[in-house]
Length: 146
Image (cartoon, rainbow, N blue to C red):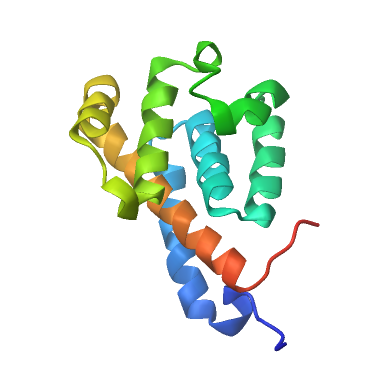
């Protein structure tokens, strides 16, 4: 098996491009809680152990509860722990990450727009896209939790 290089080592310009995406998100109005929920849930769906580990730690450091992180894969059944806005975000994250299955339904999209507004929904979408990109890089380059 060949030694795989992480993006930063293989192509610093490509890495900088994704980091510019992260700078956009950091300057957006997306809350830290929402950003971390997106990062963890998308990473769970994609099976990126490195990202789940990293962002679970980041979420806890930012004040997220361990209980909500543990129950994130089954948030539908633990809906009492998540706000309507968080559930809209998690629905978007799941449908966008698994977009080949059924696309993003009008129900999920319209609910996000109604609860979050157009600008915030756009920022949520961009965060989901970014996390999916990082997961694909992490999984392809065999990044492991440390």
